[in-house]
Amino acid sequence: MTVSDHHPGPAPAGGLADGPVAVLANPAAGRGRHRDLLPEIMDRLAGTGRDVRLLTADSAQQSRAACVAAVAEGAAALVAVGGDGTVHQALQAVAGTPVGFGPVPAGTGNDFAMDTGFPVEPLAAAETVAAAISAGRTRPVDLARVTAVDGSTGWYGAVLAAGFDAIVNERANRMRWPRGRRRYDLAIVVELARLRPRRYTLRLDDRELTVDAVLVAVGNCPSYGGGLRICPAADPGDGLLDVVVGGRFSRTALMRVRPRLYQGTHVDHPLVTSYRARTIELAAEGITTYADGERSAALPVTVTAVPGAVRLLR
Image (cartoon, rainbow, N blue to C red; front, top):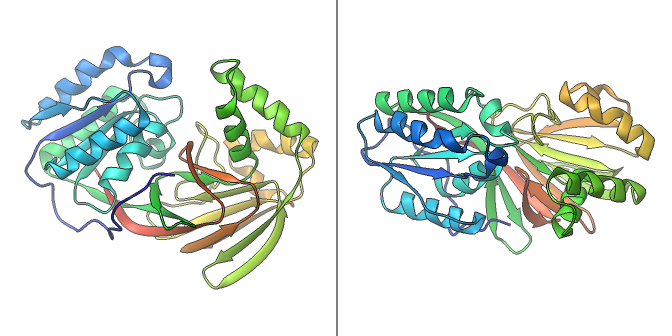
């Protein structure tokens, strides 16, 4: 769970402040295939006439700390070069502040950048961000705030997974072998053999539900996992969160419906139900959630849509 020391509201309206541009880059993102582009990305940002500073970090925790420090020291903009994990760490620093934020997609999964309208090609995205910096232009979009049972809070931009996919992620992160994508594939096989519906309690604003489900996702944006449109109707500008619940799926039925997530047509399946709310309280036994693909809080949690919580450089 990402812990925040403050509980800011929406970012205030207005243009981009004076100050430097901080850049968080993950050279290992996307298996390093965009590593050589970083000098060109830095050049494009330097073309704005502002001081551009590359942050130093060797871990997710250090990345988050470096971003928080850059914002505290007066950065006017923060640019995250990497995938959803890199974006997630940066969002913890800029949420609820007037600091402009630019995701440059260079990871295996770039769902937040794609769903908020940034180009898929890293240099094109960098040019979009640089143009916004030069013009002093930002566009507010929503984020989701997660509050754990101990009161700690964190932010996410795309989707919170709280069902089968979260369980698979948790197992994969405990495994030492194999490496890379094969570890995740093996975790799917292991957890499919253990698949069972779990009892969830959901409070959607003032409505309370009890459901048996294998899949629960809370989306600020439509996609997670590198293009799986789990919450296809989610809109990061509507001040609401979309909740998609997959009910009592068998192993076979779950695997058959999974390919439909790429088009978002799984929501038409009779075992899938969708809801929309501003605040969601979600509880179940033995589930650790994953937000933007990063380990978040164990259930129960409260997830709240915060309108205009981040100012995108678009």
